[in-house]
Image (cartoon, rainbow, N blue to C red; front, top):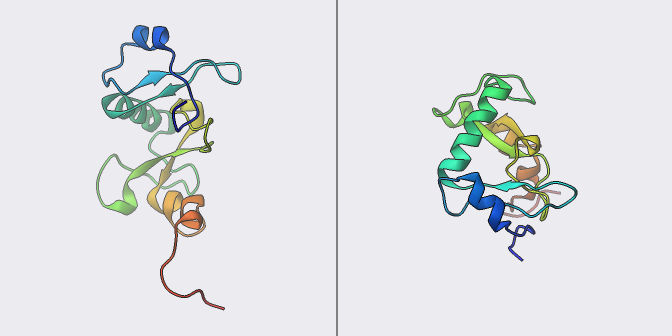
Length: 120
C-alpha cells in the first residue's frame, strides 16, 4: 500500500485521462473513490479551487493571488490531511493565504520543529 494509504484503481485512472502519469484515482474508500494528483493535474485542480473560492482566503478573507509576494500567494490546504484521508478532491481543499496556512497558530506551524531552547 502506498504511503498515503490509498490503493490505485487502474481502470478508473486510465479512463480519467490524467496529464501526469503519477496522478491516479483511488479504489473506493469510505464509500467513494478519490483523486491523488501531481504536476499539471494538481495545477488544474488548484485553478478550480481558486475559482470556487473567488481568490479569497477562507480564514481571514483577504484576496490571494496565484503568484507574487509570499504573503499574498494563495495556498492549497487539505482539510483532512492524515494518512488515508489526504486526497486532492475539491471537497477536501480550502484556499488559505500563506499566514493562515503556515503562520503562527496554523496546524503546519505547530507541527514544525523549532530551533533553540524552549522558553519557560
